[in-house]
Image (cartoon, rainbow, N blue to C red; front, side):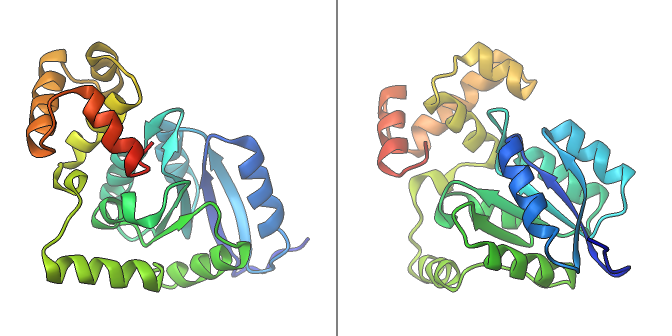
Length: 214
């Protein structure tokens, strides 16, 4: 299908080929949307963003078992005006605020209708933001009431360590994945335990399961 010269140029960053191919086929039916690049991990995302002229990035919340938040921050540091929509298997309430604070223009679950995703792409491409009304109302209520889930008290790095811990990773494995020392990981774990008022990894896992964070 011929594309309009003004088509919105999209990069899809997701490690699932079937999902990428599905989006590619869906966007190919719209004259004003064009997938010009794909990435399967964070380093490739940063490489492709420099290589291609883009209008919107669709970013999976996790690629190859690694949260994309750090890459999101790096992308926005290099290209602060490039809109990013985060796609996730998790509900908005779990991760959206961290990505929005890092500069994302939108957050959608992968269960969202295709029409909603297309609407979001078009909106952020012209400088807008896209979040559900329900999520914005929930955030406003929590802010006014001063109520936050315990995991929202964690810093972004602590939250990454928390995610890896509850997924069964050892301190050594986490250190390798995050390129930090085991001693630093251990310190983060201590802060997490304290902030979340638990005593063990088992309790962290129970919390994560109860709150649908894993």
